[in-house]
Length: 250
Image (cartoon, rainbow, N blue to C red; front, side):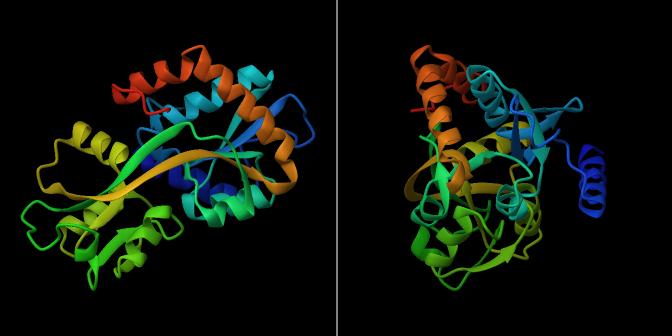
C-alpha cells in the first residue's frame, strides 16, 4: 500500500510540477533528493521517510544549521531533478565514478560497500562477472550497477529498483541482478526469501557520496566539513551500526 501511495504522490508531483520543498530562495532550507524506496538507505516506515542516507542527510543539515526537506524522486530522474534545481543535493547511495565526478560536485564518501551478483537459488551457470556475458540482468537504467553489468557483457533490462529486479529474476525473465551487498542483505533479512542467492561478488569496492551541482561546490565543501565532524564525533559510526551492524562509513 505504501508503494501505491508513493506512486500516486509522485504522479501528482510530475503532473503539477509541485514538489515537497519550500521556497528555493530560503537559505535556511537544505533540499535533498532521495528515492524513498531503497531500503535500508531511503525508504518509508510507518508512513515516515527514514533510512541510513536520510538520517545522515539530517545530521549534516544540523551541522550546517539548515532544516532538511526531502524531495522523493525516482532514481532514473534524480540527477535531472538536481540539474533543474528542484533540490540542492542527492542523498541516495550515489556511487563515485569518473563520469559523475566530471559532471557533479561529489562529497567525501560516507558509505563503502561492494557489489554482488544475485541469481535464482537453483542457478549454477553464474559464478562471477565473466558469467554475465550474454545473460540478461535487471537494473535501474542509470545506476552504477547497470554499467557494471553492461561492462560484463550482459543485456540490461531497466527496472525501477531492486524489488522489481528480484520479481523479474524469480519469474525467470532475467538471469541475474547486480546490486549493493548492503541492499541485498537488507532485502534477505526482511523477507527471508529463499528463492534467490548471492552467486558471486563483483570484486569491486564502491564508495558513495552526496551529489551536488558543479556550480554549487561551496555547498559540497560545507557538507564535507560536516561529514568530517560527524565521523570524528562517532555519529556516522553510530548510524552505520544502527542500520548494518557494522561501520560502513569508512
